Amino acid sequence: MSADTRPVRAYLSGLQDSICSALEAEDGRGRFNDDGWTRAEGGGGRTRILAEGAVFEKAGVAFSDVSGTELPPAASARRPELSGKSWNALGVSVVVHPRNPYVPTCHANIRFFVAGAGGPSPAWWFGGGWDLTPFYGFEEDAAHWHGAARDAVAPFGATLHPRFKKSCDDYFHLRHRGEQRGVGGLFFDDFDELDFESSFALARSVGDAFMPAYRPIVARRKATAFGEREREHQLRRRGRYVEFNLLQDRGTLFGLQSGGRTESILMSLPPLVRWDYGAAPAAGSPEARLVDFFLKPRDWLENLK
Amino acid sequence: MSADTRPVRAYLSGLQDSICSALEAEDGRGRFNDDGWTRAEGGGGRTRILAEGAVFEKAGVAFSDVSGTELPPAASARRPELSGKSWNALGVSVVVHPRNPYVPTCHANIRFFVAGAGGPSPAWWFGGGWDLTPFYGFEEDAAHWHGAARDAVAPFGATLHPRFKKSCDDYFHLRHRGEQRGVGGLFFDDFDELDFESSFALARSVGDAFMPAYRPIVARRKATAFGEREREHQLRRRGRYVEFNLLQDRGTLFGLQSGGRTESILMSLPPLVRWDYGAAPAAGSPEARLVDFFLKPRDWLENLK
Image 1 (cartoon, each protein chain N blue to C red):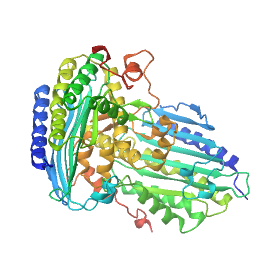
Image 2 (cartoon, rainbow over the protein chains, first blue to last red; image 1 turned 180 degrees about the horizontal axis):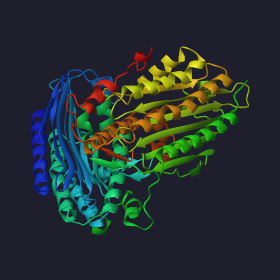
Image 3 (tube, chains in turn blue, green; image 1 turned 180 degrees about the vertical axis):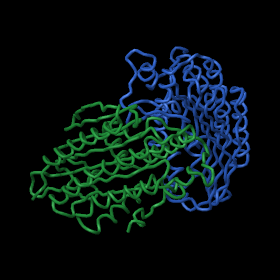
Image 4 (cartoon, rainbow over the protein chains, first blue to last red; image 1 turned 90 degrees about the horizontal axis):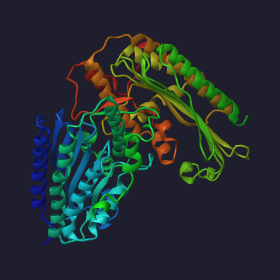
């Protein structure tokens, strides 16, 4: 069966709302706004933001469905045969910045791209994944997260989880800091190895598994007491998140360079951030252990085997 | 006379200290640290930071003097004849983030580059300038700033000030926001149009004029009363500063990509920053006037002619 955009659109739109509902339930107080927008060149989106919640200082869940009649050459450098064809890009992106430094930040994305739909040889692919960025590391949280990632991908082939896990570690590496952004998760792109139905099922499985992977970690950590020290550490670590997104993240850079909607793209940036020259946690502290132990590529499921 | 690095080094090193002394005097409480560093490939620097002063929340004044035996091809794309030659890059960079939102942020830089020194045809150039980023605009501040810029450059040729002013406006333009970073000032690069002595004198004139341009503005605004509203506006506008530096600033991007010292390069980032989705000042407010009137390229000396 060839690519059909309609069920993908319906799935992603529903995923946006189900993630917002789950985050609202976990927060208990905050509510998402609903900001629809359109794009002159075709399509539009819905950006939903929860600000100043009880648990979540800022959470963004964005759906976009943008299209055009001619794919620019720059967007099809690796597949020159698609240049000039009509295209449609759909996606849901999630970034959650919790208030409590013991609750990790998380990011998820599911996207679908199709070019030349309706023509003789349409090209399509899925991409996505999710990654976790703790400020204080807990091995049980990392193991739960990666176990959920493994289980989401397992039905689609034994080789996929190790590949997607490694792609995530490779992608979320801050080169100028020599650090991982977090403890990783899943990352895949340009995925069309299975037939359309199975590839879509894989994307749905990853999308559906995201909140069950994240929510128990939030529930477990959100009541942990914290003070100024933990908050300051969190604000500084959020600086690394900004650095990654503005210096390296391909979606952010491509979106801004191609005239995307700035506020929707930059909803990923944390609400409050610090940069202090030469700030470094004391050796042996939990803050130092984050960098020294948790922010290294690692097999978090090792002890569960 | 051909390029002589020694007097440039002595001048820049002295400029760093005189700027630090002036900022300490204006602050009244804060003191600069003094963090020397060396670079395995050659050279090093001194990064001086004043944190949590009375007037300045964070100020960085960095001197660097780095060298190598073979200029990489990427660094000499526009002058391929320099590839493989020995090189030396010297510079002083200043970024000041005041606490009071009525005091503008400022940035200054003076840099010197020489390749093939001692050989038959050494190449050298100067670069630099300074630009002002207010959170609340004042026409008299902008006029004073640009008057000082004009006067610093005037002795070296009548065409230079308009060119350097326009280069500054062109350079400090946030493309994805459609905004200027601030009210501009001076910007020049690859400058070797005059002989070495005159070019060096121009660089000194710009360097020497910086504190007399900035300090009266600080003195005039630092006691202005402000509250939460002004502080929040300042923190959000600082987000634009981060966006510019990490998305567009050539020195920052080249420095990080080429393995420069991360903490010295990123000393430019503000101490505390906010990003709020869709935040926009009320029409007609002073916060809106900043963007609508002050953050446009403009002839600030018009009324003084």
